[in-house]
Structure formats: structure tokens, C-alpha cells
Image: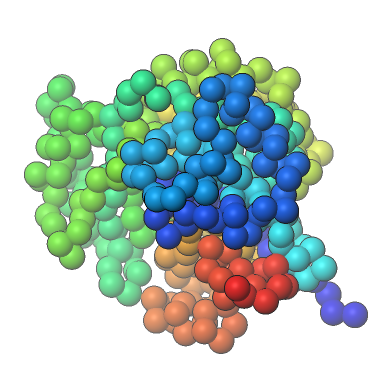
Length: 351
């Protein structure tokens, strides 16, 4: 009998349900009736459109599908459905982690939140700014074309942030460390000033992230307070699978203080930097997986994960071309949003 491969599952964050993903639930998860009904019954009670309705829309709407109160639930439904589809005869899930909003999804997939509590947390936090987004985010590379960390890019970004923050009217913060990129959160004046100071790279960066708030920064202190008031600690349970958070801290099934888990999730995780790079580094070093499986929708985290693997020369990956070559012959990162890689994760033929 062939032994199972060990896998770390990575949960996606905001910005992963885009125009190509329209219909994702219908394509892959129409059979997940209990999951979808739990989510949509909750949303009906909130007076919100169902995720099935949003997913089956005739056209993708940037204004509708990227709004936090809709995007969060949509992405959760897609990711939770994908998690259920992982072939358990082939893979042993040894840990779960996630990027940004993906931490909430990690809590749900690992069993730290029940299905009902999962949609409550995700929908509540995703809907916090439906009446107005607080601040924004932009992304900037700190790596070169080979996906090695570029110390000059990093120094330039850090110096630019210091210059911008010297003006009391401006606020910019490191929001997410995302492999070879940093996501910067800030108020509008701060981000505009930063965009003027930073050198353009590849005629693309710095790039604003549409409909994204100043996540993982002190600007969301009020959101943190509202989240604590709306979501009781009693909804949190010890996980059934180890979880790696945005500090690289591991929450173990038999050693989790649920009050501390609630406090981190609605406190530090909301207002401090989310270090996805460290989460991946800890995941590979502490759990020694054979592969990483990235839940859909989309497949945008593959690059950030690969850049982190290269930083640590994991699986003898030394540069971008090594990762691309490895993915063609013996893939170590399976993104379920890519049909061919989905087939490897689920054990079912690609569409």
C-alpha cells in the first residue's frame, strides 16, 4: 500500500475571485448543498444576496464581486468546497495556513470554527466596511526577476515609507509580507504620496489593490473593536488540524487556548502586519510536507509561495526557473484554481 503524501493546505485571501472565477461554485461545488445552504441561509438573514446567486450572475461586476461583504463569503464558499474535495486517500493534511482573510478560512477548515461560526466570522468581518472602505493597499516587489530577495528594492521601499510617514497627515504601514512582494496599507494621502516617491518597476508597480482596505494596520483598530463586540470567544474551538498564523505561530489541536485564539484573530491579526512569508516558512520547516495545496478560487498565491521556497532553498529550488521546471515534472505546489493541478489534488480528471 502506498503511503499518503503529507500536505500543508494554504487558504486564499481577498482578491482571488475575479472575472475568470465567475461560476466557480457552479463548476465544482453544486454538490456541496449543506455548505452552501449554511452560508446562504446566514446571508439571507442579513439581507444579502446568496453566494450561489453571485456566482451564477450573467456577468462579473467589479463593484459587486469585489465588495468585502460579497467577496469574503464567495471566496470562503469556494475554498471550503475545495478543501472538502482534497483526496484524503492520497494526502494527509498535516497543517493549514492562509493569507490575510485566508486566516479566517483556515480557522473554519481546521475545525476551530464550526460551519455556522465560520460564515459568521467571515461575513461579519468582510461586511465591516460596507458603508465605506477605510484606507487602502498597494503592492510592491522586494525581489528580482529570478525571485531572489533584492536588498535594494527593500531599502528603497523602507526609505520611501519613512519619508512619507514623516508628514503627520500620511500613514503607511507594512500590511502583508507576501513572498517577494510587500503589501502596504495606508490612508489615501499616504498611499498617493508613496506612489509618487517609489520608482516604477516593470511599468506595473506600485500597484493599488482595488476595493482593498488598510488591512493589518492600526487604521483598522475600530474594525477590531467591532469584531470583538460582535463575535464571542465561545464560537472558537481548538482546531482539529494544526494551524500556522500570520506570525508563524502554531496552534495545536491539544494545546490551544481558545480565548487567546479569539484574541489574536480579532486583535493582532486585524491591526498588525500579516507575515505570510513566515507562515509558509514555518509550515515547511515544522511539518515537512511533500506538497502544498492552495485552495481556490484563483491561483494568485503560487508565486508568493514559490518565492518563499526559493528564499529557503527548499526542495533545492534556487530561482524562478527551477520552480517552473519542477512544476512541470513533479509539482510541489498544487493550486486548485488551475484545472490540471486541481486534478492532482482531488484525484479526479481535469475538466
